Length: 66
Image 1 (cartoon, rainbow, N blue to C red):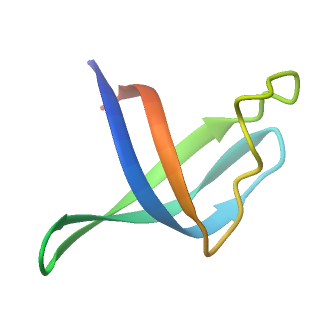
Image 2 (spheres, rainbow, N blue to C red; image 1 turned 135 degrees about the vertical axis):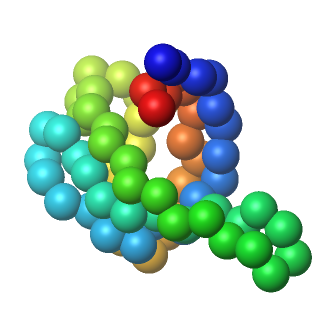
């Protein structure tokens, strides 16, 4: 199953070079946070995708598989 999702998240960890994976956290409510694992693919040809780095806030948008 897949879903379209847009989320602003804090990147806690990043590993890999062409296929990036790690852990991120997003805020759901005042004192409620969700920690999730992500996997992203490096698209070096695209100007729309910037480097994913640890300890940064990033916008994830696209089709996600759950």
